[in-house]
Amino acid sequence: MCGIVGYTGDAPAAKLLLDGLSRLEYRGYDSAGLCLLNQDFSTVKTVGKVRNLAEKVRDCQVDGLVGIAHTRWATHGAPLEKNAHPHLDDGGRVAVVHNGIIENYMALRSRLEKRGHKFISDTDSEVIPHLIAEFYDDDPVQAVAAALRQLTGTYGVCVLFRDLPGLMIAARSGSPVIVGLGQGSNMAASDVTALITHTRNVIYLNDGELAVITPEKVELRTLANVPIEREISRITWDPDTIGKGGYEHFMIKEIFEQPEALANTIRGRVLPDDGSAKLSGLNMTPREMAMINRIVIPGCGSSLHSGLIGEYYFEDIAGIPAEVEQAAEFRYRNPIIEPNTLVLPISQSGETADTLAAVREAIHKGAVVAAISNVVGSTIARECGRGVYLHAGPEISVASTKAFTCQVAALLLMSLLFGRSRRLSGEDGREIGAEIARLPELVQSVLDEFPTIERIAKKYAAFNDFFFIGRGCLYPVALEGALKLKEVSYVHAEGYHAAELKHGPMSLLGDRVPVIALANRIPGQEKLLGNIEECLARRSPVIAVVSGEDANVAKYTSDIIRVPASSRYAAPITTVVALQIFAYCFARERKCDIDQPRNLAKSVTVE
Ligand code: M6R
Image (tube, rainbow, N blue to C red; front, top):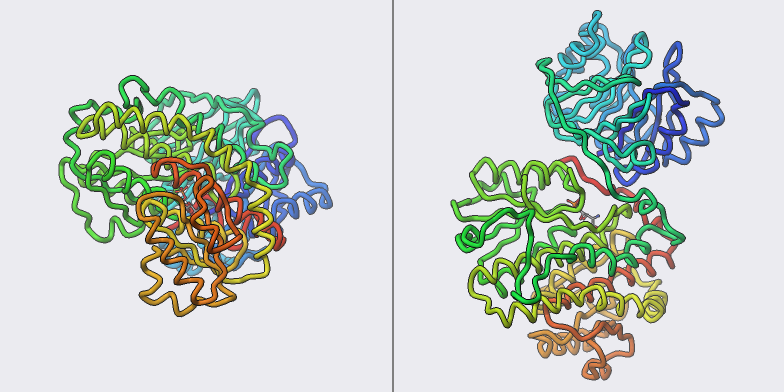
């Protein structure tokens, strides 16, 4: 799970590659490297982040008009220089950067070693340049295709040949590769963010395809050497949106972008008069929607949590039974897919390997599959062919914030639409539609509470264990709040259904274990107040999130975070924003690396 970028053109490549890599760091950042081609390859590698690599490249004073680069999230082999990419064959003829996992690398490596190849890294990736060199006689494209045909697993690769200056070959199977088309220069990368400052014209490679790239042209072929025609796509979003815009971290920038992001998710999709919604990307008629009698939602991490909120919405608003699946389990448990089952994968990046595998299994089993994704043109979005884009703008911080709330808003829109094709009345639909339209304003009110939330986060900054409790549609928010806190601040945090405490976890409560209670006024709130009493009786300090001026909770604690009063449908969104701010302020107080937490990566493209 890594970021790759390659360039061939008429400008010095090092700066372009380093710039591209810094935008790909969300994919991994434990080591980095680049390889530039002049008469020979010059390779520079470092442990740590791209800024370390930039310093080393400057000190080495290397450059060239062609190059490939890589930022790594270790899967095989520790984050050491010898394991950083690019990898070369032992004759130094072929250089490769790879994102993905080669599952049969041990067998390939031992076969190559028997033929005299010498390996220096512990990675799976190093077999690729060796294999290409083995097949290379005078046709580089055939050599790459032949080598790739030997691989089992996933790859996105960029390949250079020492003796063929100007030529770069990129290919993909299971890991994204996008080709960027410039003037007198072309690039390839794992994500458009690495290309956007160079060009807005891109070509998305599909699995089993390779691109033969020179400064003047790009040709696509299958691994069987059949030429392919592909339309050029135009990136329309603004590259400025991927800078920090004056904020200290991407996470807080993205938290504060939520009113605008939600407005973009909602724009043009609420039909106030009909009390319904319009989601053209779903491409389903009201009759087809009315036929759907079960919804299965696969996802991972925060996307799994938004799916759990969606489950409440679909059942409550549309009366459709819904169930959420950890995407990694989906294909292994032989899921039951009937003709009228809608599978609704959720993935911010649209590249998560487990969710993609679930999508493929669902398609294989004949389900109607529609994706909820943020990244236009991502693999999951393209393979589903229908769905709902969030339009939340690029999310760079590893911790998902705006994508999460926009996913929940998209699920609410979908529930409204499906509800109106079934049991939901126009009047109830109009009420929900009005609440959806109000989401940006409601979230702005939570952002205005930043100073209070920051004060509470600082007060608790020395604690190392937290419980988050909620009921109903706030139970998944408790899970998400705990995930946010542990992800960015490395403290132990658990999310529980409030009723579950007494079945075991309560044994851990005490004065060093604060409980964050989601006590908004939604159905079941009275029971949650009882749960707060149970925690206080075990001496746990309580921080309560409450709706509006609700005075009920003030008698239990003075650490109160107020979110605006709303329906139960908006409450998960307002509440989670408060928890995002809490996690951010807490982590900042503890001086954690907020945007790139240790051991994590933004886009998890390995199983
Ligand atoms: O891109 P995806 O939504 O498929 O990513 C799924 C998870 O990896 C992701 O939500 C992860 O849990 C986030 N880091 C949480 O903040």
